[in-house]
Image 1 (spheres, helix red, strand yellow):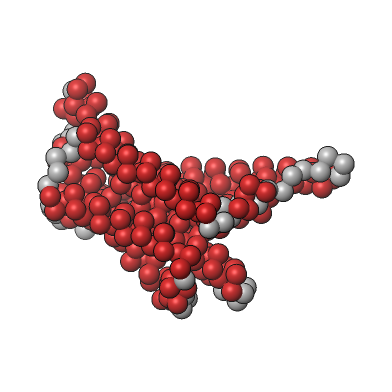
Image 2: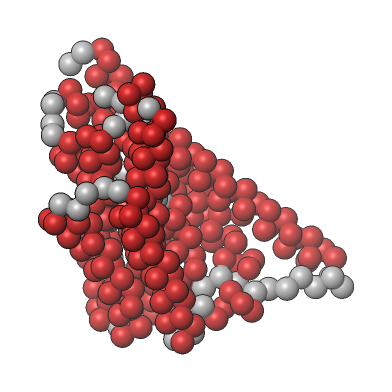
Length: 299
């Protein structure tokens, strides 16, 4: 192995370690703190976690969009494979913690349906050979907005979002308690924001080092994208196991909350991948073509 590839492998391992640490120690702890202070439901916590864990995919897709059409194809396969891999990793966590019976609960039927849609949609696009364009990006964005509207309405009907609207108001007559609540909120927000920044940087290094290693083996664009999808799914893997691990032995309600949070992490991450991140990549690609940036940057 050459010296450059040796450094790439070391960088990949270090970036993986930083990604796991950022999710476990910063992002999830920050979300737990905000959820406690603001009274967030398990559903809201899971959705925010899902968007946070999609940051590596965002970095990877934007990088491929600036590198030309062939590289953009790798970015699409990164998204498509990541959505499938996220589902596999979620099911692995379910089996490991013996939570498979909870998926039969009727309260989760909407999330499971959205999950199926988020996995099948990119596979259908790949099978039909749809040409990447701004029109496709707008259609996918419409799917994401439709998911948001339908999910919110169904969640309110079932009371899954009730807690966060109640919140925990500050009692101005209890100065010490109010100050403590404000301090807890700031600390939790700082943890979440710091974790997101670290996750973005680590995701960028993950993508770069993995792509260097993969290109050395001369793989086709679709297989490069699939390999990058596996690498950029490390945050979701960490989240699924961490949330289930923290809820173990804390009662049935806490157990269902963990499954609710994990399902929404899975769905929001997958829907953000195909409905927000890939369309943004298409926009960046089109703009770079119009400005001639792909000729200067791309391969």
